[in-house]
Image (cartoon, rainbow, N blue to C red):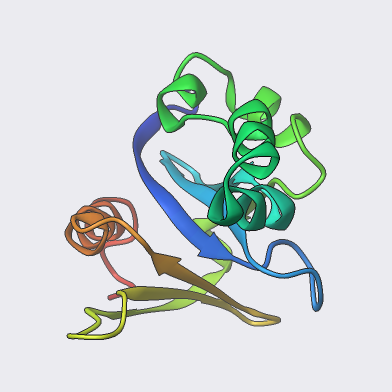
Length: 143
């Protein structure tokens, strides 16, 4: 059976694959029938540039992807599109921890594997509920 996309949660901020340094990046969490695909929408410079406006804002516009653009791409093309893109098979995820956030904090989601905790801050208002729904649909025994 062909792998298909169930839904996308975007934007979500995180550090990226194996990145211990480099500041936050903006990602889309792409829930497929077989795995979670993490796709970089914008890097640290674009996020920083967007905050200061002017040339930075122009740079942000030039390098950022829109989540809806991802729907027209194959899963393999998504993975090849940027070195920071990666996938986690659902079989490797041992625990998902979701926090709603509060008055001064944004919602977060941790996808824990045996080797690493993948933390993402959900920056859209409906991100928590959308992510919860997709985790429940794709990994019903994990939550």
